[in-house]
Length: 195
Image (cartoon, rainbow, N blue to C red; front, side):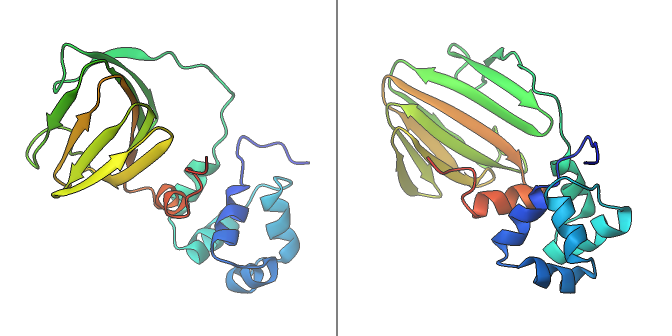
């Protein structure tokens, strides 16, 4: 088996998401079924031309496909205390890993946070709110969404939104870049949110 610093099993994920068989992907890319199978099983590292053909057939950039295939050794990342501008007295914890940022917050008291389009946290990203305890009501463009424990709410960060946290609510908020098409696809296919 070829040794690699990359994990290209994402190719199988993308192929299955499109309902493609190995034969169909082979016809689309011009690569042999054996080559694609070896790549999906991490038995072979794709050549540059194979990588370009696969990325093109999935409608993603070669950079996205390459980036998501990167493997790193497992490591523990220490979170850092963070004082958010909207609740400076209430410290949360933040972890930043490449382009993904997530923050853990605990609201001991009932708290309402209102943001506007010119305000805070409207980066070009997606926000994913996960409630671990309590209840949150998120109003996005005047529409209320109730989020209970073990539920997620996923939305574009540039939409007008506000939060109401019941007392005793604990949340995780993930900030995910919009320009990663594979990340978008994984979200759209609910592969990150099966509980």
